[in-house]
Length: 121
Image 1 (tube, rainbow, N blue to C red):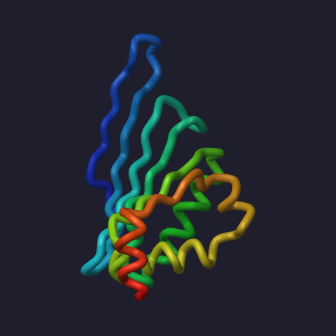
Image 2: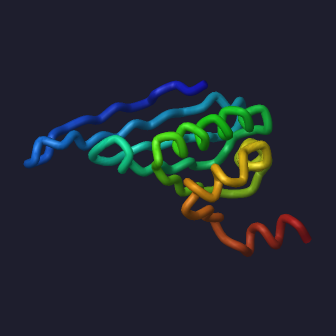
């Protein structure tokens, strides 16, 4: 499903593990990143940046389900609304269980509303 780009672990003063994982999902010509960070399991936070092409939808849905199973939260960022960045998110969110989405998705951020409005005019 994903290729890990970076692992970073260190111990803070209380000997908690501080970790950052960055995953790149194969999205052909598009972009799709998943960043997971935090101190301990169950309190880590997640960011999904773009969603790649439509064929990434299943991966996006699996990631969201994984996040919900860990009782973690996710913020979703859309850098711009070209199809190779947003179609995977649309598909993944569309096939995800509504209760799972309510449980773990904090906020969906778009680059800006002007780009979105201009795209659909």
